[in-house]
Length: 246
Image (cartoon, rainbow, N blue to C red; front, side, top):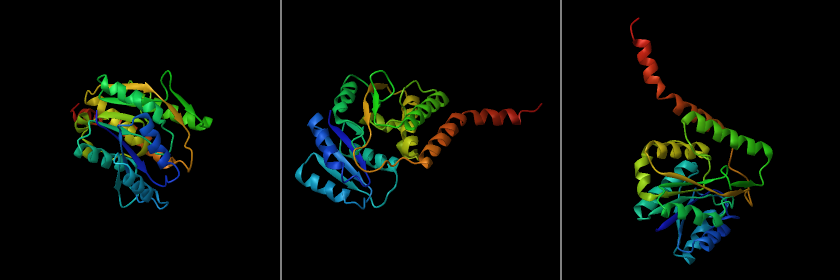
């Protein structure tokens, strides 16, 4: 399938060239779209230089730092407009190993609509995280799975492959979520739409350069949104019960 790997970037000048090179080493036919949010460190300029030397690389410049979810949605739209059959989410900081990419694409070829790269299933792993971060990720996943009734082991991971035609069934125009919350949102939408969702094991590696974009605000947004989504279907019924005469 014609494959597009979406790499959102903000201040990833130290990581971008290696990320692109590793993707092409693992999947020489894949195209890469760098979605840069006007990085002040020169990431956008580096992306342009890479694109000028390699027709498999394109760059989508955005005028401001507008969040991970918005960046991915822009990349999805670009990929759909350009006729790609497979669209991949992947971090540009080296935490998602390009060596695992063929495993995700193989699962699409075998009939999946969405393939989740899973850290928490048998065969998956995390390398380089402190204990508190491991516990936070495991707890966040467990909370989201239980509250939303999702049967998947890793619903917050950002290494995924979509069959492009199925993305249009997820009502992307209504997505407002960001960060971890964005990843959970797409999984719940895919599950509700009846898409065939498959997990494959990956090894997540702590970023090579720079600092993580994760913050307490992103975690709180995810917790609030998951709770709101889980309770929303019950509200109409509860309201009807309150209005019912005694």
